[in-house]
Image 1: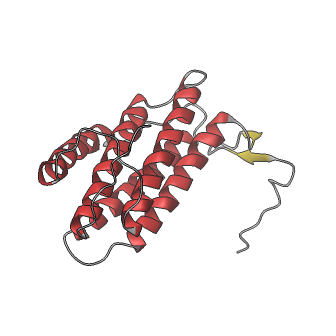
Image 2 (image 1 turned 60 degrees about the horizontal axis):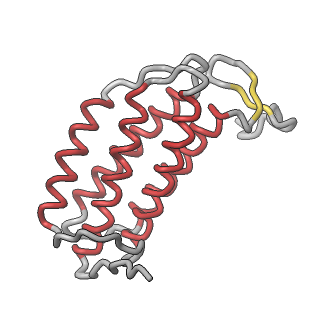
Length: 180
């Protein structure tokens, strides 16, 4: 089976119901950004070394599955409900609290970076924020599952906590932003 169809050669693509839209359509931008986020998460996973961060790796793999479900939900013209997101948001909040409770307390902004894992988790956080903006823009024009926005918002918070934890796990200190 060939992976190319030539059906997108004129700048259009099909949604899940067969509706043809421009590749610049906000719905395509939304699920395309989710796909990009999923790829960044995959890169972050590839940099996780053995140690305490193995739990983070397992969670990131679950997130990748969630993101494929979310992308599928966004690829439906009327928006398709994505099951289980509300439960996942609660799980994220519990995990964020668990992670933040072991980290050194800070009340300032930090610079993205540190270990490769942390750096890619910070990148995932920023891509998640962009995905959130795209999905909110879509929600202003078309119907979507509202729990997707909540999930992506909390996910970006989780990526922040995981990035800090990845540095902590390898004894790398976060760099505090020095405002001029």
